[in-house]
Image (cartoon, rainbow, N blue to C red; front, side, top):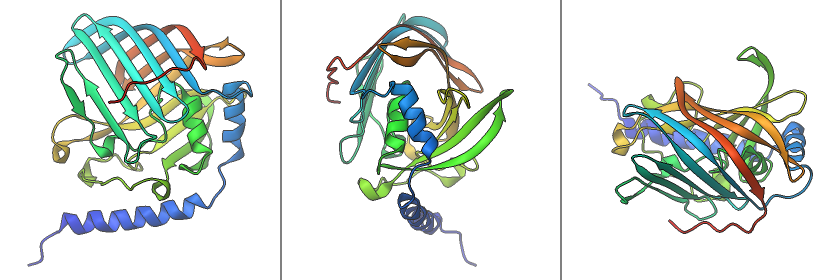
Length: 267
């Protein structure tokens, strides 16, 4: 009797994914992304962004409220710092490195490195979609226009973005394929744009549970953007919510600044 060999399936999956990515990389990004980038940046380049505000986090341990600071650079670096009653949580990612690096630190001060499968999105700046769109129109990603659809009762323009492994060291896929939701690949970001303003209303990406890589399960997390205000000539969302079935994080920003020369510490 022949036994199923998961290693072979993963190998075939990688070959097919690499082939499809190579095919996608020859296709120019859809024009709607260039238009969305112009809308988000006001036509002026953004080198870095710093956001501060309050946040409410809900998880298995209960609900906590505190403050949050989020910093990102156009080169692909990000840092998120949450100060909650239980302590400080820090998340640092560097997508400009090859291979990419990232780590998180909890209230106990211990640093934990992210697995390669958790560093496959187009940009670590999930809280500032202009950098995601900027990556999508570069050779670093392959993007496709899915079409107009109804989402949460509103009409949106749907664009799908995946990282292009041809331009950086391929990352090992070591998670069980059975843990991936249907129609998703690691690193995929689905962006939903308002059809009139072309400002993002939602971003859907895969996140994983923590623990040994062979036990991780992946699920689509939805980031919602609202309360857009003009800051230094650029529209920016002051209300950001993260959903995984229910609200995980609810952030209300109080300040946003651009191009301050922000520097993110190495992880």
